[in-house]
Image 1 (cartoon, rainbow, N blue to C red):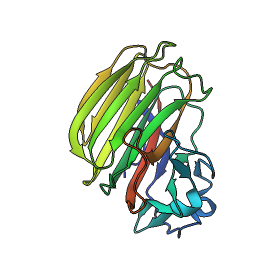
Image 2 (tube, helix red, strand yellow):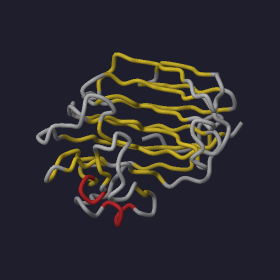
Image 3 (cartoon, rainbow, N blue to C red):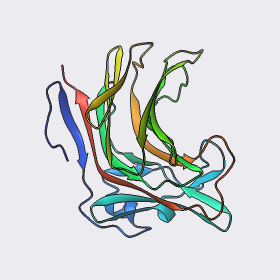
Image 4 (cartoon, rainbow, N blue to C red):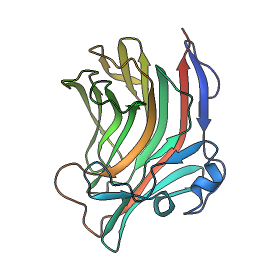
Length: 226
């Protein structure tokens, strides 16, 4: 895991999950650095229910998000690092996932004031877990619009995804290679980072037997320090 400042960036958060936390204990063990969407919030599609107690654990040096169904309810999670209020920043995560049909990631920067689409949205990595990874820069515009950057990468392999957000510019980096740059109506108000893991947006809800894991090896965040 990268530790310390980088040129132009001041590190404000780093976690490589060195302490085990059995299912149901994540927020008590890691609550100083993390929060999560509470139960029974619904996810974006409305087909999933956020429940950190049923989905989040730490084992073997990785945060584990267990996506599954119990008694007809599809359980998902959105762990959220506790960061200072940030306008501009660098956000990096090492992750992989099982190719579980019916579930996806939309790990995002979301405006602190919830004024969407006026204040934009940044999604990376985003995609169905049994498909390809993409990045999306939603314009800070009341009329919406976005830049999209698809890749050929799948979730089954380990990857490092990084967003670099500076005035007028968003850079998306996957495994050290730039996959896209957006300079159109880039957000310029405070945003927060959420590892939003949910049911897919199209194609209907997951089957009751679809289950698997998203693993997060480490997470780092930096404020912009020009």
